Amino acid sequence: RVIDIAVNPKNNNIWYVAAASGGVWKTTNAGNTFSPVFDGEKSYSIGCVTIDPNNEHTVWVGSGENNNQRSVAYGDGVYKSEDGGKTWKNMGLKTSEHIGMIVVDPRNSDVVYVAAYGPLWSEGGERGLYKTIDGGKTWSRILEISKYTGVSEVHIDPRNPDIIYATAHQRMRHVFTYIGGGPESAMYKSTDGGKNFAILKGGLPSGVDVGRIGMDVS
Image (cartoon, rainbow, N blue to C red; front, side):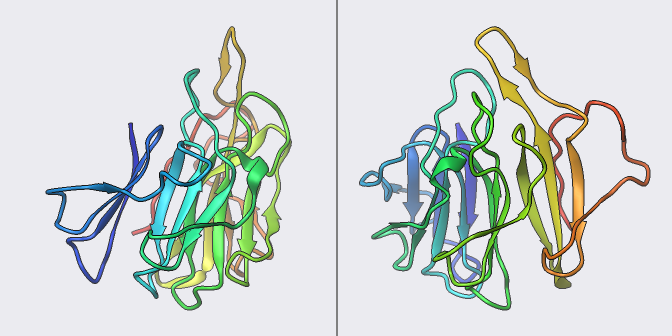
């Protein structure tokens, strides 16, 4: 399963392709050939890949695929490369197990938001929305819902990077069933860079079980 693709905005011949159970692949010729760039790391399962909008050589990878089916592999946190995928460094959030999405503030590369889905087969872990202001050296959980509800997506408003959207998903996997939603699934919005969040309710379901939410910002 191909889980995510990041295309270099300054050179459309360069892509990074994240595989749910096959690492990260890079092409420099618009997909004619690919090379694996993540085989030396501890995780083979990938949830997302993001290119820093301010520096095409800085690439972020969230390990642990962001699917929820039975045959799902987990990861060991967030990785960062500063040389176009030649070398990687684990930047923490190792107990998140599954990373849904990573976004970088277009004004400041040190500010990064990570949607941590959290463990699928168990409760707890590093679960919620995390933010770093020092390029990944330290992380703060700026949105925490519960031990069963993580964040699957995070988006920055392109007109105002202080406006943050996060989609929360309550789910739990068992051998005999999959609980794919709950009353804690919701969309959150912050207008101050993640200091405060409010649940979006107008016209959206509330007080009932809600499944996984996908969104984007025009």
